[in-house]
Image (cartoon, rainbow, N blue to C red; front, top):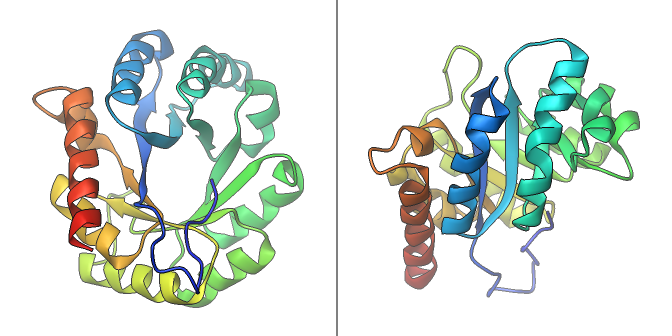
Length: 220
């Protein structure tokens, strides 16, 4: 995952999608669903959220999904769990909060991707970047499904895009948020559980999200 931003380049490519899974306890059942979604649009990365289990079970769940995701051309990141990334064959991990991110750095870097979300302040986001984050994420819900106001998320992304070259991920909590986050300057648009709850299925939902990105790029 690399940045599209360059302070002298005003024609950086459109953002790419970053797919966040529901919490998974049945990887075999999810594999075909994910494969269909990844075939429906260009997806840069999949954030695999695993339901709580013992370490061996977690590793086996990730191993059951990783090759398919990577064969589709997407990076596979684990939600937390930096200690099992290498054993699971994943490409990296996403850490929530600056403390968890810093604690995981020596485990992940330099060979694997280390992303950071749960950043409550601009200062924390800058610290994550200075510490070696491969990307920062803005707007994702916390464990209680709380998130900043959408206007605040758009403002944070616009600030970041103007000043920093490290990529930022904007978390879209609905299809309607995809275009505005792209217009604000996000390099990646994270799409989560609403994709999997879509009446037409995840493949149709992610194709719609990709369409919104194309419209935002055309309008920009």
